[in-house]
Length: 252
Ligand code: SAM
Image (cartoon, rainbow, N blue to C red; front, side):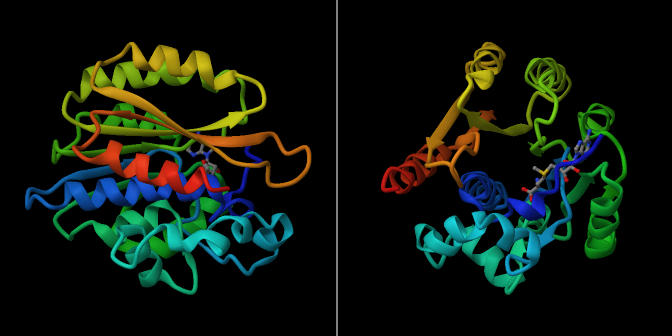
């Protein structure tokens, strides 16, 4: 059952963590002329109306990018992507399509029928959009052509088994694609479900780390109290950018 819809959460504090890191990484990778592959396992609809009923119902965007857009300076790649899609908010596919070049290849998986239809209509011919399980797609594509590139894994964590399945998927992808950067987002919940997953992920490579930020719950009783990123083969400088962002989150 697919019940998660990102329209309720787009632009929240967790998105600021994930999208800040994603945009920075893509800007870094595109400094070299060589083309790259961008693969996303859980793409969502691509672009979000933060004034729509879903976003205003939760108020998460107002607590996130609505209140703290200044964390990203005018020349930050996330700000540039936001400017390009304004007044809509760019989801990860829109950030990627704004920052990547015509020579790069973009693969986006989205399983939810309505989200997939919206994503396909919005992306048009700029990306290869698949209505397929994201991990199945990633296993089928890796190693991709071009070989350089980034894999973003952003599951909704609706199943508890996600936490034990993800390290197995990433281990296999790591063996298949020994040059790609992998970025995995995970929620920090009141329960420590993510901790075992992170421990398992960190054994895969010395060239990897987890980065976590904390924030107040969006509403009383809301389970998410922070945002985490696991990065395999991080680009040079990403740790510094994440440390800068952590300083912003520390002011909350
Ligand atoms: N990455 C998006 C962004 O940052 O803009 C948000 C994605 S949202 C957190 C997760 C998405 O995964 C949802 O749109 C959901 O429908 C989709 N999804 C759930 N299970 C999936 C699966 N097995 N394969 C592909 N997509 C899936």
